[in-house]
Image (tube, rainbow, N blue to C red; front, side, top):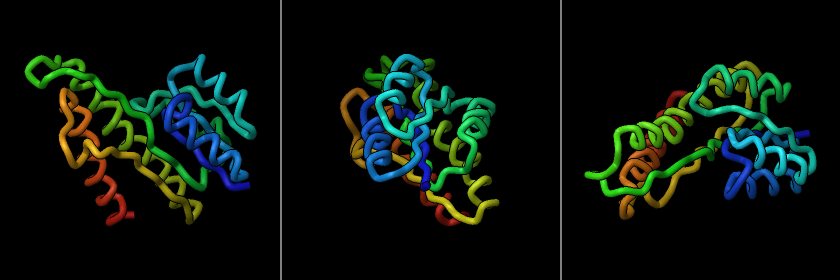
Length: 161
């Protein structure tokens, strides 16, 4: 059975990805920090395994991959947050939170799973960005900056891997 892990998979787009993959016959790992939503999503999606982890923690992501028990055929970096505020009012803590989850989380997850996929000799990594990565959106400067950076990071991964 093919397998897929989606980060930020308990809600929204991530959950839709998990549901679609399950319907297509995949074993699905749903990785999220929201335990309540994660358990609910996993219980309602066939062949789904809940994986509690923050994409900002190398140790937690490694543990989640180990708990899943196999290197997935597909890894979807979907986890993301936004903090709405004009740049002059955006706190440094909010800026760093968005950078950490969206960009650093994509880096951490990708490098961990890429190593495992290289050992196996196959696999695909999908990075979710946004129109805000190419066109600024009102009061979402940190979010757009991360989505633009994820596009370039994806090109770098493609070049190297």
